[in-house]
Each structure stands twice: as structure tokens, then as C-alpha cells.
Length: 515
Image 1 (spheres, rainbow, N blue to C red):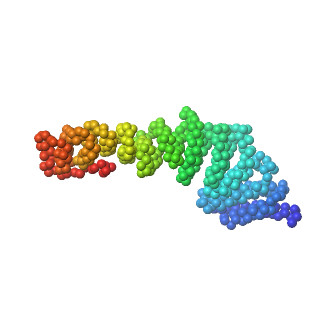
Image 2 (cartoon, one colour):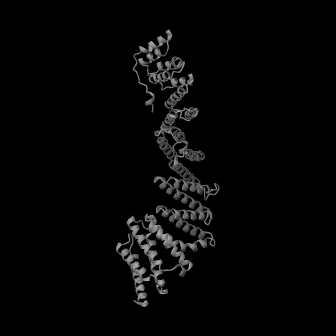
Image 3 (cartoon, rainbow, N blue to C red):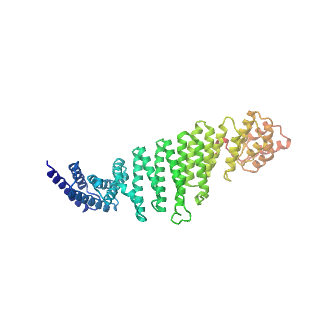
């Protein structure tokens, strides 16, 4: 076939594409499958016929006409709410326009034509991106990048609204390509796009409002990708990405007096807490790095303390629940592995973010970590005292549990004092079963004078309290006290009064049953 025949064939194919695009434009709603397939076939034929040859001026003009017809059809379609299958058909239609644009070399296009080509390629890539077809998206994005050279050049020349629009378009292209690269595991490309996005923000081509929202969107994307990395156990990469997100957040110097940015304070705070929480998670997963993770937790607490809203005043916010769950799960795993030292640190961190019944449960588990430590360091006792000082006012059961754990530590250190025993016995939830447990603990440890201290505490304070309550002492208490020491006649009479009492007996929980 000679050149003239090939030219006529290409022209005929382009005319056919134009006719199909015209039929498409008469449809509203879901794109008709038959016309979409016909258009794809015609464009593919035209692309094959034009391969390696230069288009005539007439053919170039006809190509632009077909592309603009398809673009106008897409613009009308974009205002409709289409189901995923119809959205894919719409993407296929726009892909036809993008394929035709490849017939037009960049060097032969004017600046306005280059800009139009970039817009269409970017939009096609965005449609595939939204449909999670990232290979198709990346193909369009990569072809659009050379066309955006005019955008980048005009950023330094345009002003006002024009600059804002160009900066937003370019930022959208770069970030969407970045996300697609992440999805395709193209790490080098993703890093390159991330750097370009950060450069666009730092160059401040747009208004302060646009720059702020671009930063917010970028950090959100980085956090989402970090979450995916954490889920697939790529914690080191997640840590690097989240540290970059924190650096980006630190650049959001919001002017509290600027009404244009005032609303950003609230959403930035929540995003900062989210990134810190994810960074703590990544650090824990990466190498069980408890100190670094707890540093992130302390930063969250500082953020929370500086941002008191109605929810945080009541001690129950989504951020607190997320952080608590993060620390609790990791600490529980360490506890099960008998790594009490590290588990204790994380449980102590979790206590800061616990509330209600969870606070009591966390405090008790922290005490158990202290008991599990072989050397019973003094720091363990200090930790218990710190826990008790931060308990809610109605946590007397938890206080008793912690007092018993502190007594256990004191017994192991052979440093039992009357104060240790006194605090346990005087607690309103301490009953005869706990008294028996304390007695056995002291006896087995051979603590000198411990039985005398225990009996004295019971007779001087606890016994009167028990006699006045409905929880009357059972027979076992008299046996325990007689075993402890030789009682005076007056004390014997008091015990006999209890022994003969006909009131019903209420069983008091033992240490293992305290919830």
C-alpha cells in the first residue's frame, strides 16, 4: 500500500472514531458497552495505521477534534453517579482519547495544546487510580509528566488564581502517581514523587490555604501507606515514612490569628496524634523498641494535655482508645513471653491512656509484671506507688490488689512493715479469705514478728469493721487468729461473739478472684 492510500486509510479511521464518539455523546447515564468496544477497536486500528508516520495537518486537526469530543462526553459523564462497572467503561472511553494523543508528538504542540494533553492524560490516570487499576494509572501518569513541563514553568510566571490552579493540578498528579507507585511496589518512583510533592509545598506557589491542605493531604497519604506497610510487617519502611510525615507536620506553622487557617488547628491535631500512634506501633513492631515507642506515647500525651476538649476531659477519646489498645496488645505479648521488664514499661504507658474499668485492669496487670520480675527492684515498688496515685477514687478493689502485690514484693525482700499489712487489712474489700492468704504468705517467708503485726492490725481495726458489717466472719477466722498468737481473755471473748453469731456468712473473694 502506498503512502497516499495509508493516509486515506488513517483519515477514514479517524473519521470513524469521530462518528462513534458522536453516537456516544447522544447517550446519557451508563456508557453503552457496544459503542465503547467499537471506539476502542477503531482507536486501536488508527493507532496501528499511524505508527511510525507523521500526521498531516488535516489528520492532526481531526485527531484533536475526536479527542475533544471524547473529553466533552467525559465531562458530562463526570457529573453522574455511576456504579463501578460504568465508571470503568467511562475510564475506557477516556483512555481512547489518551491513546489518540500519543499520535501527536509533544514537539509539534503549542503550550496550550501541551497543557490540554497533560490534563487529559492526568484525568485518565486518575480514573484508573480510583478504580485501583494502578498499572493503567501509572502508564498514563508517566506519559503526562513530560507534558507538565509547561505547568512547572508557568508556576514562576503566573500569579493569583492561575498559580493556585496550576499548583493544585500538579500536586494532584504527583501524589496520585506516588500512591500508584506504592501500590505497585515501585519504591524508587514513589520516593521521587514524594520528594516532588514536598518541593511543591515548600515552594509555596499556592495560597496559604492551598499549601496547608496540600500538606494535610500528603501526610494523610503517607499515614495510609504506613498503615499498609505495618499490616504486611514492613515496619522499618513504615517508620521511615512516618518520620517523614512528622517532619511534614512540623512545617505546618499555623497562624492562630489567621481566620483562613483557624479551622486547620483541630484537624491537624487529630492527624498529628494519628501519625504519632502509628509511629509508636511501627517502632514496637520493628524491633520491640519500647523506649522509642514510649517516647511517641509521651508526645501523644503532651498533645492531648494541650488540647483538652469535652471528650478528653472525661478521659475517653478515640485517640486514647487506639493508643491503649496498641500498648496493651504489645505488653500482653511480652508478659506472656515472661519479658516482665519491657512489659511493665508498656503497661505503665497504657495506664496513662486507660479509663474506667480498663484503668483498674491495667493497674493490676502492671502489678503482676512487677511481681514477675526476679530481682524485685525498688523501681517495682515505686511503679506500684505511682499506679496507686493515679487510680480513680472508687478503685478500692484495685488499691487492695496493688497493696497485696506490694506486700508480696516486701516479703521477697524481707522488708515487711506494719504499714504494708495495715493497708491491706484496712481495705473495705479485705475479708477472711484474704487474711488467710496473707497469713500463709508471711508464714512461708519466715518473716520475724509478722504474725504479731498481722494479728495486731486485725484486732485493732479490721475486726470492729467486720463485726459492724453484714459480711460476718466465718469460723475459719477464729482458727486463723488462734493460730497466729495467744490471745487475751478480752480478745477471746470478742472472737467467741463472732464465732457464735447467727448472721449469714458472705464469702469474700480471694486475690485470684478480684476483678
